Length: 276
Length: 271
Image (tube, each protein chain N blue to C red):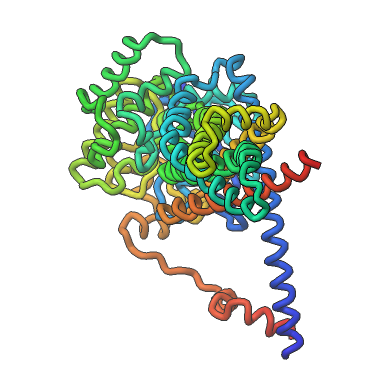
């Protein structure tokens, strides 16, 4: 831990990122840094923009304005070859696993190796077993994704995400939809994987318990803005009412603009009446 | 009040029209871009060390082509017999039943074999392609491919496109053969023409031009099926229901496009 603080190397750098979905603004000037070797957890309620932020961090989407730098490079400015080189350095475990349903678990994991390396099949099989061993799925390589339980799918997705030994691992809602025991086991797995492979891990979640268990630092996202980025202690001690509400699971009072409220209720009618 | 209401309904109608047109143009543009990207990966892929996998092309060819052989044989044969029955019935009015062979040979080769094959493949493989892509998008499998650095067009679209471009003409040729043979059986039984004489006459009537007419059309149909199915599959939103909607739309659009193109092609080429 101390070594990291002496020489903080930024693996992700986001500056004033603004993103729209249609005409709706999802991210409103997000800026954040993630340092090498840390586990950064992005938390926020549903609709806070955290999944959108993740899609921008893994270069699946590009913002309206602002920049995202992954390992010092802006994916928007790369040509095909450089983009591919960058892609090989990141791994993503999607919320639903996103395993290819027409392939076995082993084939799923082998696909990146097959596409991006010239290894022979035996080596690839060994690498697959090695990673399956890490996530505790040894011997499951011949099963189809449909034959796995929810927790196993997530484990397999982790294993596939790290098959190329990425520098950064992204996880979208790793514990969503799982029972607490299995969710805790997945948290331990993430910690162990960081230990074993020394990667930077970025987790997006709405599970506070899980966030506090694994995070080095936490970023709180709310309505497309970052409320706070800090260590778990800093987060617990913050005076911000909004964050405390979130931590205590209190519901948030919506701030109501009476005119806007009236307009929402009336639909288009109000505008028409005003015109006449 | 009424005048303002009509004005509003008029603007709304115009607005809706405009949106529909823009969406349509956008879709056509998307299809064009899709073809361009497919060609790019087909030819530039090997140089970027990301070739289109021959293996997956063969898997698709098996699915699109070989597995469709029985149903194509059945439909091709039925169409042949149907044409023979109608042809003999119609020509009997003029007492020219024996000329039915000309009608069968030309209409099967130039029209019915490509059309029936196109429609069948659109229903069978176009829907499957749209559904598969749609499901993969819903399950984030396409996103997973992208973040792995595997281009979805190269990995999913190009193999299907190649398979269709090869197998639809091949199936069309096969369907034509079966149709002509089945028609020959009926004509032989009804008019007492020997099979050998029927085959001789058919070969004499058919020119390379007729065969190329059918084959050329089937090639266009194949591209239409691929592009329309992929475009619909790729536009899926809204879960399983969305996949169903996109699949239906893909088949309806593909068949419509096939029939319209058929007419335009026939008009342009035969004039």
